[in-house]
Length: 369
Ligand code: UD1
Ligand code: UDP
Image (cartoon, rainbow, N blue to C red; front, side, top):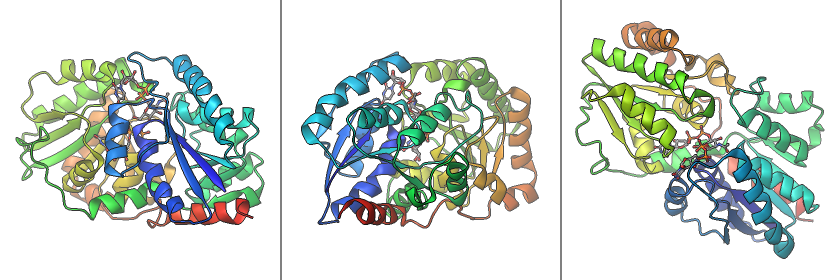
């Protein structure tokens, strides 16, 4: 059988990489790859690390791209590929606009679609925006759903997805993380040479659309004040490539010597920075899944999350996206040893590193007849 995997952003690539490795090991499967390149540099970093050579590259990223730009370009760009390749199954991941438009393209061409990381729901259509609706649309279009956790599977069943089309697999991000953290890696020459790792280091990432503008200003101002009041704390902040994020970050932290900005890190050094940090503060989806595996408490810069498993396990806490809640939760984690120690317990609700294997087996069972 022939699978066509379509993805376009950094997190999709990280989470699809283990699945591509697993598909390539199956003699019955011909696995081909189309990247939309909704992200360019941040995608290429991952392609290089995992040695992925796409068969097709739509190269669609534009600076200042709108949701409409991405959706239209993915639909237009994939149509001839679907026609030429006629895959037996299209595989998409997660909740980006690439994901949503690629699953729609598969449907337009009467090709079955498998959704990896299916069933995550925040219950709020504008948070995260537009990811909550992207994944719901993909859920409606998909024929086979790879749910990372029992809760994600339950969400799908509640929405009427037939049980035999849902497979609980774990999240492939844990497969990727275990590969990365098991490899040695130097942090030299990445813009982090001045970081004092003897101090308490917070790893910060922030990029979500619903945090653009005022929420982001409040988050960064709160964290800058935290630095001013805690001289033994430093922040490492790999900046997302989006200029909207960078402008606010530079303006809010000014010349504070305790903040270390750097370019988006390759996944290998990034995973080692996660391991060396004492606390992770983020609005990212993937980091909420990775951090508990490494025993790192996570403060989530959101008002709701589609990943409540880590919160229930006690390793993550919602910090919101306003000055007061961000300041207070960060101060709590820095000053209250009991809370910190409780949250640092390494419980991993997201998988055992074998998710990709389970997904490729499920694909073979259903489609390779
Ligand atoms: C996208 C996804 C989001 C995902 C995030 C992961 C959508 C609508 N959003 O958001 O779900 O969490 O990726 O990071 O699908 N840019 C570069 N180089 C890059 C990447 C981005 O310059 O390698 C800049 C470009 O100016 C681009 C902008 O960032 O126009 C925004 O990229 P876009 O993919 O539209 O949105 P993200 O915020 O990255
Ligand atoms: N990541 C990375 N380098 C960085 C920041 C993040 O490799 O500088 C990884 C991170 O470990 C996670 C993924 O990128 O696996 C998360 O991507 P992002 O936050 O962009 O997207 P989201 O998960 O929010 O969709």
